[in-house]
Image 1 (cartoon, helix red, strand yellow):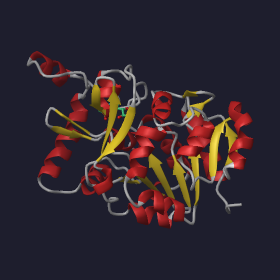
Image 2 (cartoon, protein in one colour):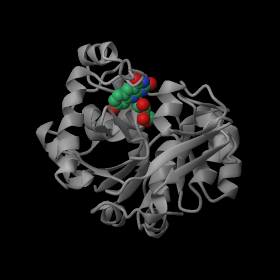
Image 3 (spheres, protein in one colour):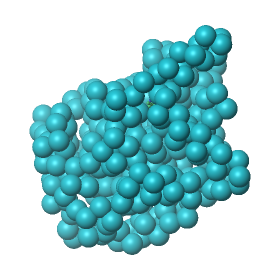
Length: 311
Ligand code: FO1
C-alpha cells in the first residue's frame, strides 16, 4: 500500500515509527515541514526533517524527542565560551548533519536532494521529502514584534503571547519534486498528530499542496494532536487560538477542511463525534497517547484500518 504522510516533528515521529513497523518502509513517503528551519551559527538546521529521519533510522533521542540518542554538547559549550548564542542546543553528532546539509546547499543542491542523500547515508528506506525546496519560514507575532519559530519555541520557551502566525515565503514557494505526485499516487494520506498551525499549516501554505489533498483519490486521515481542550504536547493550543481555531478535535477538523475524511481522536473526545459527522468527517476513537513503541504500532494500525472507500 502506498502511504503518504504529512509530518511535523516529535508527535509525527512516533506515529511514523509505528507506521514503518506496520507497512514496508519503501512504501512510505513523508512530506516534512520546513517552516521551522533555522540558521544557527551559519548552519542550515531542518529540525522536523531531522526528527523524522532520526526516528526512522532508530537514532532519535527518546526522552527529548529531537536530536540523536547518546548525544554530547561539547561544541555548544565551546561556542558559549566564545560568546556565541547557545539557546538552541545543537549536539556534537547532530552538527554533522547540519554541516553536511549546509555545504551541499551552498554548492547549489536542492534541499530535497540533500535530504534524500542524508536518508540514504542513515539507511532510512522511507522517502522523506521537504514540503518545498524554497524557503518558507513560520513567524510568530508577539506583543514585542515578530519572532522566528525557533526563537518563539526554544528561546522564549513558548511563554510569550501569540497574536498572529505567518508563513513567510509560502506564496512564492513550489512543492518539492515528488510532493504532489506522492499525494496523487497515495492509497492513504495520513496527517500526523502534529501542530495544525506551525507543523502542518506551513505545508498546506505551499501553493498546490492543499489543492492536491482536495483532489486526492485516497482517503485523508488525520490523527488529532489535541485531547480534550489541550495539546498532547507543546503550544498547539495557544497557536490554534491565535489562528481563530477552537482548541478541540473540532478545531483540528476545521483546520483540515474540506479535504479531511477521517479524524482519529482520543476516546475521551467521543462527544465531538456528532459535530464532526455534521462537518462530513468520520471520527475514529482510539488511545492516541503514544507512550511506548507498542502504542505507536497500535495507533498506526488504527490509522491503516481507517482507510477504505469514502462514504
Ligand atoms: N527543541 C528544544 O526545545 N530545545 C532545543 O534546544 C532544541 C534543539 C534542537 C536541535 C536540533 C533539532 O533538530 C531540533 C531541536 N529542537 C529543540 C526541537 C525543535 O525546536 C522543535 O521540536 C521543532 O522545531 C518543532 O517541531
